[in-house]
Length: 314
Image (tube, rainbow, N blue to C red; front, side, top):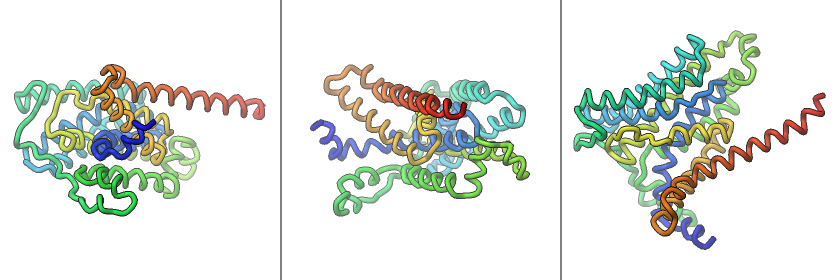
């Protein structure tokens, strides 16, 4: 317990959290939009990987990080548009489409890396411009919480702040705005939307496009902020973690934000213990073990609620 409390006051530990939170949170927010619209999107891994590759391409060619971020968003939107065309337009099964997109992303990035840059495995070049970190040293001088807030924001990527703001904005959008309410209706009661003359398919397409854009931002964080290079399959399961977070929270943005920080804390704690006494395999598995426990707990709660309400309905 004392060791856990000491971590909370460790500036290095706090500063490492946003690097894990940002790509996972951005991808999960995109998945939340799909979840609320009634689309099962497990292609977050592939979208994130394509975004990371496109970000490096744009930054390498223009020698500007903003160009890389813009190209990453466009590539993610294109992936979302392809998903929408196959699933919404052509009525293909969402899970099959998502698996196909994940495989396409893994293969296409490797192929294009060799075709465009004549590189194999890694693209690391001085012409790749990274995202400039936030320079807010004054945060550490704030009373009461400066010791915590300073390491979380000073020296971090601007995309971290954008991810936090998007989580709050999407919570309000889905709960109070007309578009958000219609998006939820597309997943919960599409017939009611059709009776109002609103197409659920159009809303699902918009959700998929927005999801692709957010996954593109997540990829840009990986390849232009966490590092300034591209490595084959560098998403490394972060898209799947985002999928799990969406399932755990049922696509609710603020609980999703809390779960993303919990995952990041467990990941950093595991890495620290790896350097001290824990085996590497145990520390690597820690976040996923907690995820399985969380999924089992949620499943038990839902089954319990069903057992309580079913006799009343009968």
